[in-house]
Length: 232
Image (tube, rainbow, N blue to C red; front, side, top):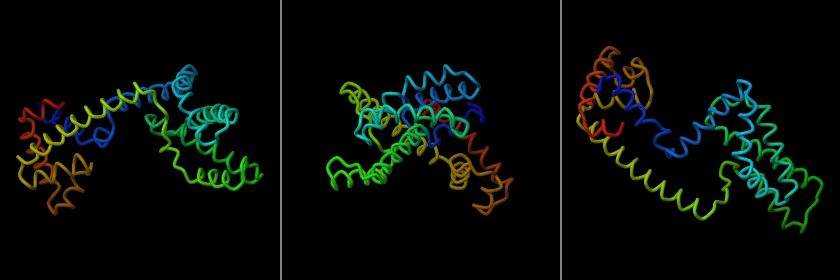
């Protein structure tokens, strides 16, 4: 493995997305990003695909907040329509669903506020308390009901993913333990913290040239580790 390949591999292994997002979720986000980019380029069918993909999920979120079928159906349509109009404000295309959920929740909360202002409660202060509590709810924590087979499949996938990640972390620790302390610090700051050589130099009180030399010397050592190459 060349130094360039080693750098790319370590960058993927150290990636926060790689650590925190399962392969299935990462693939799903990549798919969303592709549709969003096509939509931004004027492909209206891409928006149709996003609606088809998330319509049920958004409806369930709306209904869990509003507890009213017709209002939830309307809120679902409004959420997609607003996401279409605001799509250019979404910088990270992979986060389309979070973006959509936020729009959805904001609109539903507007409806709740309107209910409170107009004092249209079904069962008095009990409902009022429930509706007020909705206003402080984080839309990104709203759970979407899954079929039993979907839940089981996701649980098994997460368990497998966790085992793989533990193996990755163990390999990274083992590889880094083979480096000199200064080399290890340089690699972590450069790859995980994504600092420039000048910033690494300031952090470690060394010259930028020493930081660069130490970094590439460390990459050369790491490129020889078979157990690290197997994770790429």
